[in-house]
Amino acid sequence: MTNAAKVLLLGPTKSGKTTLANFLSDAKDAIGQYRPTVGCRILEFQMESHHGSSRNAANNVNNSDIQLWDCSVDRNVSNCLPALASDAVGVLLVYDITADDHVAELEELYNVWNNYLELSPSRYLVVARKWGDGQPNRKRTIKMGSLARLSRVEWDIDADGPRVQNEFVSFMSSVLLDVRRKRDEEEITILKE
Image 1: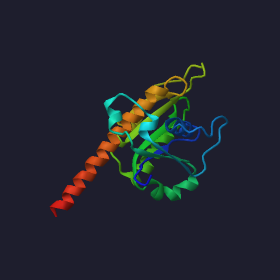
Image 2: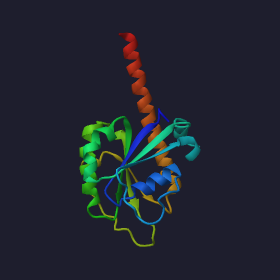
Image 3: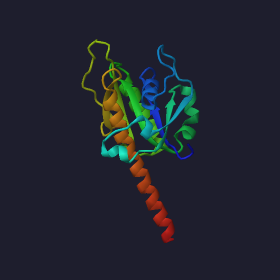
Image 4: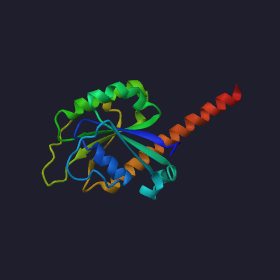
C-alpha cells in the first residue's frame, strides 16, 4: 500500500483511539482489557471492502487504500512529530465525552500537531466517544475553542457503528477529493512551466 492515504488518530490517553482504529479497519486484535498504545500502531485496509455504502461519498473512496496511524500521546513521541506527521492527509481527533480534561488535552494536541501538518479544518474530524453502558453520559456544553470549526461526530461503539462508518466514508471522500484536486492543480502548474 505505497499510495495509501495516511490518516492520524490523535487524542488523550484512554479516549478510544485504538478501539476506533480497530472498528474502522475491522481489526480484531486488542479487544478487551485496556492496553495503552506504545509509539504508533499502523492499520492498513482498503476502503471498499470495509465500508460498502450506497452513499455517493462511498464511490469516491472505493478501492482507496487507507493507513490509520494510531499514535500514542506519550511525551517521548513528541520527538517524532515531524516524521509521524509527514504525508498525513487527514486526522481523527478522538476524546472521551465523559472525561473532564479531554477537551483541553485535545485542543493542545490539535494546536501542536497542526503546526506540523498545516492541514485545513476540513481535513480533521473530531470523534466524541460516548459510553453505551447504560449509565447516563455526563454530556455538557463544551467550549471547543480552536476545535469549534472542525466537523464533529459522537460515537457509541455499541449503538452508532454504521453511522460512524458512514461519517468516516464521507470524511475520507472529502479528504481524498481534496488531495486529488491539489495534485491535479500541481500537475497543471508543472505542465504550464
